[in-house]
Image (cartoon, rainbow, N blue to C red):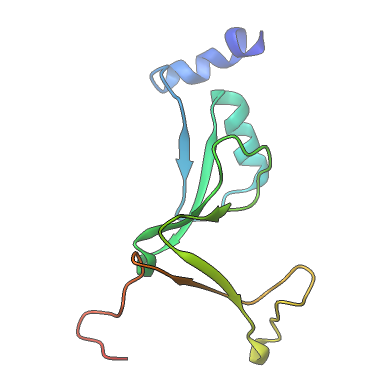
Length: 116
């Protein structure tokens, strides 16, 4: 009932035909994701990626009820959490911490004219 009476105005503000929203580039709060899901009555997918991984590396599933995480690795890459003892980040911490590493065809092999 609220979708038809109240939140239809939000959807109509953006054209009325919203089926899905995608966010990336910077972290977004759990409250904002939940607000957008309610107001626009559609899934909001949160993604994570890097320039080096050709943008998208991880994404939430369309109907994931939880907010505040970036989901699972995309099918184009594998992800691994690596210990960084010099920063006291180890995968055995609770929650696990470390360097997130990606591997796959979408990951760049290097930078243009930069051998390092």
